[in-house]
Image (cartoon, rainbow, N blue to C red):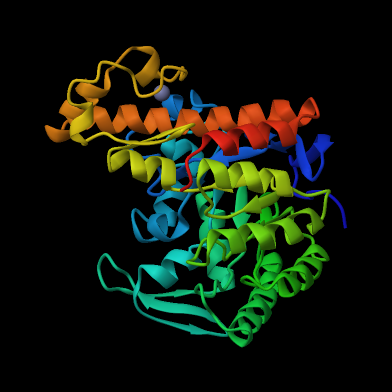
Length: 374
Ligand SMILES: [Zn+2]
């Protein structure tokens, strides 16, 4: 089994350095240089930014949340208006999740059976059933370049037995998702297995034998110690089929990305840079700035003098940003969001260069030394 199979897709690794690799994921909406970070556009928008502003951070692929778009405005409406690309005006590549994670974590009165999730919408209480076939149908209507299989993500701290059960269910659903996929959409399988490296490796082999266009690692960053996640990643990531993109779901901090790229991961998504921005937290190479703190009251410096984002390069001071934040002004949320996503965009761009030039270990060491512990 090798490489993506959906029409218009290809994945080429151009250079490797240790387990780290850099390449290009080709999609019907353009090339995505990897490693790549996908900003999260929960409701069809990366909160506070226009598509052009998101692209200016270096992002060439974003993630949309199927659960939210399915409930509102509805996948049929999005399809009627030309699909998620036309609807949102994002011109580059796009991936949607399966909706399973939100159905599990946000919905009310949810139950899990062999057939899928049954739950009540958190918006209007309506009864919904998310089966593997429905997850593929809804993602097909949304029409992103990449769809994700429906999986079972066991909560952090689950027993080995519970994790084994989730793995088996995820495999059964993998077959059903592939049978009901839209032929012109890429589909990624999701490897589960919690913090049990042997279960992860066995599941990676099992899903790797199926005609998925890429393989994801799900069920990380669900409450396990971060060191445990990195330990398991170091054993598992480079064992995922080298011919297909490897996607680590829902992770993480800049330091997590640096370490996971070193373990062999190509794709990431996380709400951290956008969500933290809206809480007034700016991420720096050397730590974080909580903008409401009194110490920035008269600080004339930009967030990060080394940063070339619109917020820092146009000279907005920490004192001004703090003032905007305390006054409840929307502009500060836009500026810090742009800054945080620029940091992620810059990080993956620098990682790609470092891998191409065979100096990734040095790059990672320097980054991790400068970063404050999270
Ligand atoms: Zn900046």
